[in-house]
Length: 547
Image 1 (cartoon, rainbow, N blue to C red):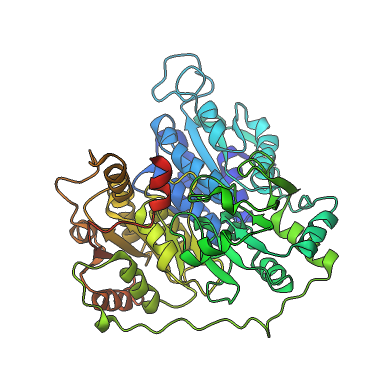
Image 2: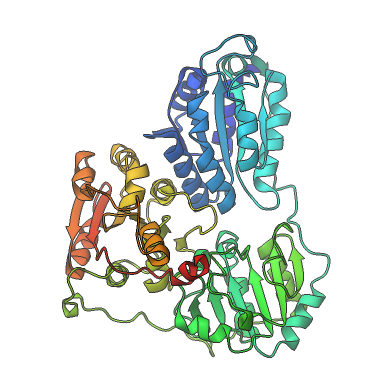
């Protein structure tokens, strides 16, 4: 039976459990827009294609299913490249579909040409995706779609891209089905015996957890390994919620936003550093000194590219699926958790009335936020000093509730990620931790949340500047250029202009009242927090390394 290409594509979305598709329409992709409506898949109209890509990524991250972002040809596609790069760094499966005016007319002068004769979107997407291809004939779709989905899901997950010309979308081809690639087993190392032996022999080990440990959802495996071998745990900024911060073995964050406890332990003579899901980039190793070098390292990673290259010591590398390989370690060693020995500590009490300082410190704003939210609230940290304050001051008693990237670090990404995540998990409180600089870049996506009734809480620290840049330049050169806004953004006024509920907070009690109202709202709430513009964020280790 023959069907239109656009109809077959949307039928696959429905079969794969995709309930929301994100994008901005244009002529070259209009058949897909119409078909989404016909097949009752909710089309989420964004305000900028970059934001749409972020929203699709947040949806994929929270739902565990495929995210889909659609953009028209030319600039519609190029606008999505940043969000594809961020999706690749988070390792989330997102299908980016872009248009092309016509395959038949390729080679002639075309408006918004996305072929090799214009702005070649296939080539542009190649560095930021795991697979990028142009479907030049309808009969190529079955194989190309299968390639794309297999690359998105097998091994380390990530984004893929298909450019589909308008006339190809309109072709009639034989119907087909591409299944999700659950027919492919996860990649597991041939042997983990050496890893087990290193764990058994270690006298003073440390578990170093990165963002990959969070996205792999290896929470139970990490807990068992930590408790069985009684290993202290530290987390890179992106690994904040890979382990409960209330666990007795947790020593705090390391790198930017790190804790003195973690720093002290790292200089105490580590003999084995077990790295799970961290590339050990400069942000994650910020402040790392020669005396912190362990005798050996054991690194669990999907990919060999950066493994064993950041710290010059002998490193045993266990390649493949993180969760599966950690399970294999547990099975081989017969490891068991020790819940009776390591009972989780309660969150500390909090009284906002005891705080008197004006203007408010950023760290205090996060203590007030934590005390006002359910323990299982999902939080997304945006690019900026606000998130390093969050890393340092937020307790995370529940694993998998804080997402932050310290590698690609696209400003404003958390705004879209939060919207997509809330659509995927409507029953969970979702909080976007962001700043005035990020709002100026991607804040119009709050309008998307308003239009679709998505009750995200946007927690915005406002100090009238690009804080990390301002403080970094000031510390190293004695002056700052181009990082302070001459006319600071009225965040709450901006939010209200788009139809969102908004509160401006000067004291922790204001935050508590605003969060309580936001938790029962039917739409998005923007909580603008006026913080001390002169406060030095917890990024000193990076500033020293820049000197």
